[in-house]
Length: 97
Image 1 (cartoon, helix red, strand yellow):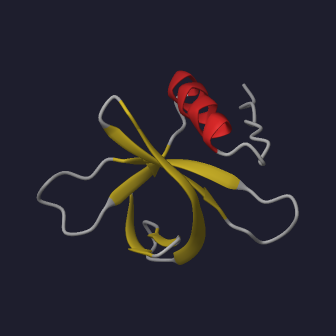
Image 2: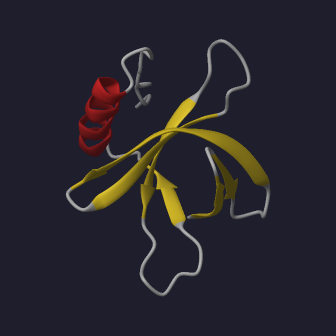
């Protein structure tokens, strides 16, 4: 799980080892009452994007996000983001078995 600090269009992810990594928030959406963020590292032309799922509960003082790795959930949410962000090609990486 990763805790976050959100400011404007950027989000700082704090991993299990307390390392902070800043991502740009490209888009937000909700599916089935769950909030999702499409974020990018914005480092180069072939940016890496992640889809994050809000797993926080009402008692959490900061949002808690997890990277979406369930293939069906990822496909559904990526489809929504593809429609919302028309000028960006979203390509999902296949996991090796």
